[in-house]
Image (cartoon, rainbow over all chains, first blue to last red; front, side):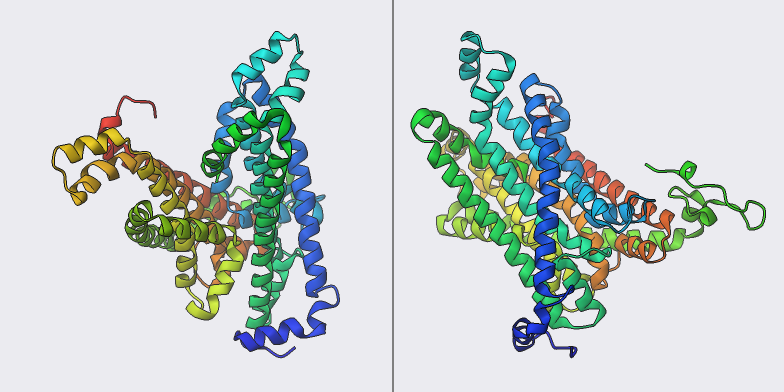
Length: 247
Length: 237
């Protein structure tokens, strides 16, 4: 491929060339890798962080960790942590296991913080009423606290998903696939059009994730309606504050 | 953290046996022998941070005050900031490349954009939260708009605005790391060179310095906020 310019025509040429899309290093495969690795990492982080947040929130423990883990996560550069995993001995290295674990570590904070906060901020009157009805701890968590915490848990999932899509890009700099690899190879080949195409696709994927999950979130809160409208709107109003505090 | 213990002892005696040869993660000898190189990278990193923060604050102050007063501007700024914040940093740096070229300026422009999203949000919500009573009292005492802003609204918005500043500063330190790809210099250079040459002490030292720098800047900002809001002394946090 010619070392194309970074102008609009160079970018369009790159995008419309079928060769750019085919093969292992093609855009189609890189996009699939990106979405797949992001999804795996998000799944791993969710399986760990949401139950932990529910339990800690329910028992009222771990508040310091739940509220400050975001600051710690922000201070650790994703690139540096990925490189450390790549240089670790077997079974780590430049492989899927390293990437997914490192990315999941960065995805835990928003999930843990939002789940914990959602449970802690569940209406105490409702929780007390549940307890008065003779509910056990597990029932209380499942039937009262979790439904009330749902909006915050969902917004934590959206934050985490957008974040993991962004960090997945970085594995392209340490020998992994993903759209970040497209950008990195553009640098190696000094092909600015390729760099721009990779960047545009990454940005589009991140924005799509934000908008798509935002829509899912709104639908979920609207569908709740009926039974507990008051609770739903109450939590809805509290959402923006909770959301921005986390980001 | 994996340390020397996980590395088997190799041919001790044949070659000088030290942590550089063993490629240990933790290696004081690396720090002492490469201190010039490390300090240079650190200094580049700090320069990017300081320039980013100064420029961001200089833009965010007027923008935040205007967005607080003008509803259409508020909508525009907050909407744009969501979009900017969603774009991954590697993509943002790359998209700026045709305009700003290789060098630290590309990284600084992108980091200013990210910082602005947090700073303006923090300032606007801080100004929103200023109690009406305080504003009414100042207006009743004959404060003009400028004096009201400078002596009542901004000081009361300061704690919230500083929360935004801390987030911006810590994120900036971390995000600067991938600037090496755009020839910005900084600690990312060392991490990358450690990756390509499989040199563990270089990677770990630079990574730890990054985190320490972020924590140090955060602590400095907390102290600064305490100095700037002496009336809050004794109150929680």
